[in-house]
Image (cartoon, rainbow over the protein chains, first blue to last red):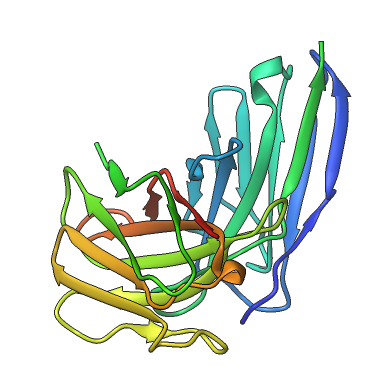
Length: 110
Length: 116
């Protein structure tokens, strides 16, 4: 299947700091989604992106669909302890299925 | 809206038995449901894509005779792990794509399967 490279793999930050993570692929995607997963639970959708160049916010979260359609990034501003978790990007090619990134594990130190 | 449920949330079974996991879209119709498998600290691996009323499409390396998928209605898909073995122990997560509306998928809470 398609491989989405997500970086960084893990992050340890102080509460209040901003966070940035990104996802890249060798393929062109039509849709990018960003999810957060807490331990033992299913992923929860954070932001969905449908057009190249699109910049979308959801509270302290902002995500962008790269112009080349091969990448996307997610920013979290003013991090808080409940932001802890694993963040996944997912991209969709033509058709139904989405392919997931390798995940970014975020730890927020109070 | 867009709630997906899974049942059971946790199951322990003996080696050689079969286990059925249900995935339901509670407040929307899902023409397509996906089944994923996730090992600890790893990403989600797509197992199969299930379309209502038709046979599931399995990803390469996934045994269709071992992981039986049925998508009998627009709100229900089931995954049956047949003759389960300890190596099948994993976290199984389903997701559903809405029939109408935006192109996205919503995940269930997952099912933790432990095979003794």
